[in-house]
Length: 508
Image: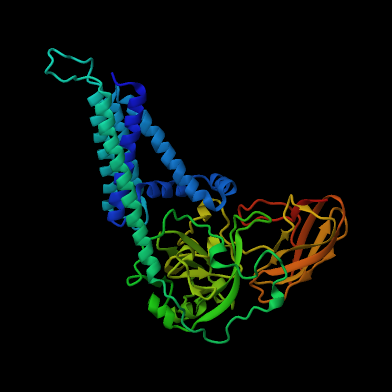
């Protein structure tokens, strides 16, 4: 009989062959890999608290952690199937069939996928089962029978197993590498379509005064490479720029279809806007500020003619993600836009190329659709965005908040003159005042950086005579409506975190 350690190795090799073959076939067919398809279903179906826990644990690496988790689970299941193959071969084959069916169901269920998307995971599972059948029966046909010196052994043959298994493992590695290469070329081709320049802006360009930046560690404008990224996409959507378009439909008088060139030819505006993720904890990093360029959404909707019954602007991304926000937020004078540019460049693929929605004053989960595909004017009952059924609020105005960036929590500070600095934001309302408190002392007003826009964060700084010992520092902001952020601590769900950002430092 085959030793158990070799049977488990046979299952692992067969599983690798199944996954890598499925990945290669999917890449060649222009579909998402089976791992990404299954991962997408996991993201869509796990409870909201588990999503939040993953973000807390892994931050922006949460999707990578999910993919690694799926690979580990598949490896463990394939290893178990190899052990089953020793005496329960049918059950082992059924396990591989289940792998294929689960992958096929996930692939077919992904937005925009057809029945052909089931072929890669099913074919990969069939190959994996064949590899397992080849490895385990070759090594487990029973005790060796040697009637004569001319007969080869029919039982366990370690050399034959290693030769066959090694060839299968090598093939899996090659197929996996080819799959990654093919998908890499796909992504590279999308990046090559990104224009190297933007059309000229209609009207005066944005000018950032030097006095806006008083925070020594946080740039007023967040570089594109550092701008936070939170989305549900495990891989970049399949985008062909020559066929891409955004459709405006639903409760409108004149439905529109706009290509990328159509959008570039329209009057362009440039605005400084701070975007924030609703998952941002108090003092968190899921908030960034950029200069966005694009077409005012109000102009497009007015051209389409919004009908009286429309309540919601409901948008869908190329990869099927959805969200919705009140029609009033697009038509009340704020600079909501279909953005084509970011910080003087065309949108990076990571942040929504070819186009995305940017709506000042609303958390991203109800407004900031990347890889935009369609905009539908509808009622609240007519469509529901991705996150709302998962327990998040339907309407999500950004709350007045502030953050301490200098010093860092837990840092040791030298005694003597020091500075405390950070950022504060209250999109659509603007920041009027920031106050800082050390230990149980009085609230002291901080100096504010120059105000650029009510839709952008505002930097602040205050001098501090640091004395030896351990100190607690808090910050709070007041917006231009006179509302001071609440001290009540609340988690991000269902409509944004609240509370004072509080840090502790040691002064030596």
